[in-house]
Length: 252
Length: 242
Image 1 (cartoon, rainbow over the protein chains, first blue to last red):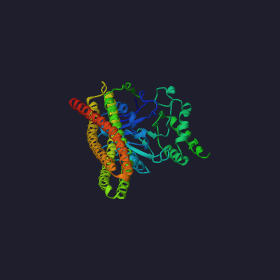
Image 2: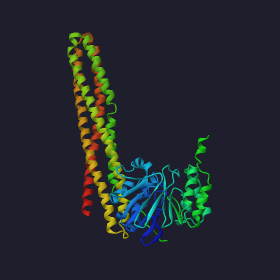
Image 3: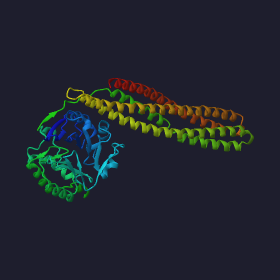
Image 4: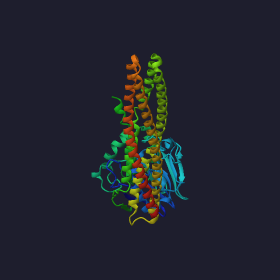
């Protein structure tokens, strides 16, 4: 599994894990992110159980696993958090697990013994260390009805979960973790966003909300990271996109 | 930006053997319960037969006295079957609960085994290896404990199978005795012989059930014991390494 450092300043660091070459083909590729500051780390969307071994091996190259103090699940999907019982087995018992209040009972199907710190609809802010704070920003209905993005104002990185996701065919992958040609890249995002995202009102609200933030990188859970001007390009592209395409199938 | 990749994953077989045997154990347990799937219906048929036999015995007056007693025994056997059935339902529930834990543990075991392999390279420190090995050991312990409980369920199932065997043997004797009574029942002979023959049919069906179930239980018991030993050996190995 690849590990890319997106940001580093002193002991504050963002790392992205993904593009596991040994992942079974039928399992969707996911990006996992770790934010570290001091001796605390949080994993954003730690991944499905199928990627757990490779993810654990990649992570423990970077940090002792007992420094992972928290897990954040943007929503309830299995590729986000079905590895939960495995992480809880290797991390300290007091690990915090952040998740929308909506999904704790559902996600307990992955791990009935997990104790969740539930996030209210309005979102919340947490301290990773004395000088790094993270904001959980509402991203409801995009695509999950209880969904959050994570913003790190110091690193100026927005973890956007499934928003910005791209399904890049393996034969088109360049090996880079970053979008290098935005216009070319939209073809890999188009179908996903049209079908998975259902609410134009929610999309508009999210775009308005994140447009106010200073973002150097927008990091999705699938596909490639947007940086620099591509962040604004992405938000503009998403704002104009017709979404909710599944409804067409119901009008026959 | 720094970027580096982990090495390709290599499959190992340490848990494969346990997994395939555990799957075999679950299949045998399911087969044993499946063998008794018509027990409900057979017990009900036996109950109705005993009621009909009692009516026939009543019609036969003095010549039906012995048959009447025999039908009362039959009803006691039917009650015994109903009790065994209830116990089997409970065992079936326990088996499914244990199966679920075993399958979940096996999945986790496979994933931690892969993790163990991946951290067993020069890039990981002893702390990482110890963490993953400890997790593997914990899951293996849960698996062995659950297999132990599963072995107890299989033993209980063997006990219930033996209970049905006793019912079969006693029903067979009753059928024989009714046939003997039929020979001396004069005009009622045909009626009593029908009862006796029908009862034999049910006994034969029960025997088939028992044969199939006993075979499945025996296999499950052997696999359960082998698995438990295999799990204990693995635990010993892991504890030695730890």
